[in-house]
Length: 434
Image 1 (tube, rainbow, N blue to C red):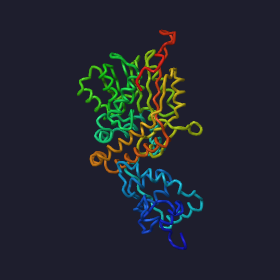
Image 2: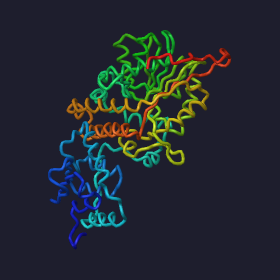
Image 3: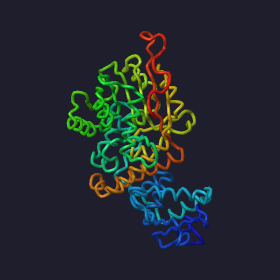
Image 4: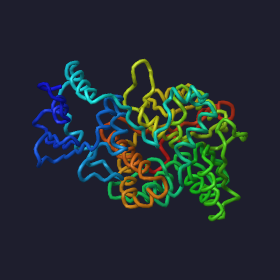
């Protein structure tokens, strides 16, 4: 309440944002905050926006309100909301500190209209608690199969709308900012194979192989490549691609958990964008499995998103928005922790590099592609889900730029203490072109 009257939305906003902010808010109740000519204009279109934030005063409340259109931003491109997000970040210095009094006043103002339970977007998945309640314990084979399907088995055509012809859903490697996405993705695949140093006739295992771009690239070099994925749609796409290329004698993609691969003595293993699904508590056993699958002097290339700073008490980096909308059970570890796990599994870590800026560039390309193919994307997955993915990719690009997250490549070798007791398990200096 304010002066005995129901508090307006503009009055609520004024409790949290300084009046000097270059922000205009126009609300459904006819109230306004900020100058009409402000650079950033937000429209709160429904009372549900306030109830979403009251019910979940965190990122879930904001995401639900955004996805359902309870608020909107003038000029926003739903496929690429990065510019609007940058503007919102610039308002941080105008945000007032939360106080118990301001929170109480806003809560009372909302509840003075009565309580209502706001709707939940149809694209939101169950919480971690609900998944466990229904028997999906994180990172068991059953749960991994379910969560991978949630993320990947939407529509191959939808992924093609933003990934482009390479169908490569991991960070590209750019020589410069003017390099095309397709050339940068080919550059990434080339770099990984060069680091692994595989020769024609040698054997590669690609864990979490996606739509098969690495398997195809390796087979074109004469390398015998096996890819495994838990996504039926990915495997079908990859095997059709292999048939079109006439590479069946060199390449295969299976729907199979990496823990069930029966073959051994691979010359090289790559894990590209897979570790985000593994769970930090399973890193050690994951790398121990890789160690068993490799032959002596075989090489491992692990390419994964990392958190920039260790979390308190060794907890992994998690995100409720990603957990419910994008990557159920996903979590991230810090690079030092990951390298220790690789080392403790028995490997020699030969090299690691941070490609953080490259992933920001990659995501900007994906957002641009989604914007250019927006109508087709909506046709394949619906407006709400397409909007979620535009938000997800733009938020990730911003997070990489702000150094909240990074991405590292780790190259490691399995020692051969019997066959090569002199310890000469790899060349003295890097043998690949950076």
